[in-house]
Every structure is written in C-alpha cells, then in structure tokens.
Length: 207
Image (tube, rainbow, N blue to C red):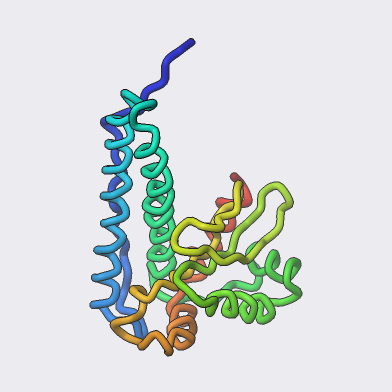
C-alpha cells in the first residue's frame, strides 16, 4: 500500500484585501476583524502541524486527534468564510447587473431579486452567531440560502459559496449595538460589490 503524508512545507497564508473606505462600517472595525481572520489562518496551520505530530501514534492519541479534527473544521471554515466576506467589499459598492447570469439565476430560483433579498436578510437575523450564506449547487444547478452556526455547523456538502455575510457580533460591534444588527445587515448590502459576487457565481457554475 502506498503511504500518504502531508506536505509539511505547505502553509496557508493570510490573504490581503483591497477594501476601500466603507459607508457606516468603520476602519477600526475592519482592522480588528482582519486580525481575527489572521487568527483563523494561524490556528488552521497550528492544528495541521499538531495533527501531523500526534498521528505518529494515532491509537495512543486518538481522543486528542478527534478533538483537534473537530476544531480544525471551525478554524478552516472561519478562514474561508472571511475570505469571501472581505473580498465582497473590494473595489467599492456596485449594483447587481440584471443582465448578468447571477441576477437571472436569482430570478429563476426566487421569482425576483427583492424576494431573495428579503429571505436572505431574514436568515441573517437568526439568533446566535454565524453566517448567512448564498450557495450554488452544481449538481442541481440552483441557488440555496442557508444559515451556518459558528463557522462550520451546517455547511452544505458539495456546494459553492457565492455570498457570505458574517453575523458574529465582532463584525459590527464597534459600530452598532447587538440590538442594531438589522442596520448592519442593511449597511453590508450598501457596501457590497456585486461584481465580486457575480464572479463567485460564475466560478461556481463552471467548477
């Protein structure tokens, strides 16, 4: 049997994002939020290193390995979710192009954009910390909205992220009280670059 080993020289690197000045989301909020993102990248690498070390005696370390694997999903998905989130601000706000493929897909799935937007915003108001996600299902060739608890609980297998809205309080607490998160949701969409989201959809559709 051919043995398998991880590439120990391969590490995840935090991405940089060209985020302009945002409307009603402060520079301080983005700066602190990016620090948290960097922490997810760091912890993803640390856990992978620890798993490699403990796996040398997987029977003796089975319990610890199991717990690390659970934690890995949290850290890795936290890293990836934030990359979708921050990229959606790059380049400044643009409107959804009704002639593009994403707008047409939203219309097919939900009837019209406003219906989708209302439903997505309602998901974002789910109690607790997590993410509102718009997915593309390449098997059924359709869009789906869902809620993710924390960073990882509820991700839909085999689907591609098109839009990710961070609903942890750290994403808005320097600008809005917890009771004002509905305003934060509105502000998120005011700052959204739909061209980035459209590209996510095209990438997912062609994957």
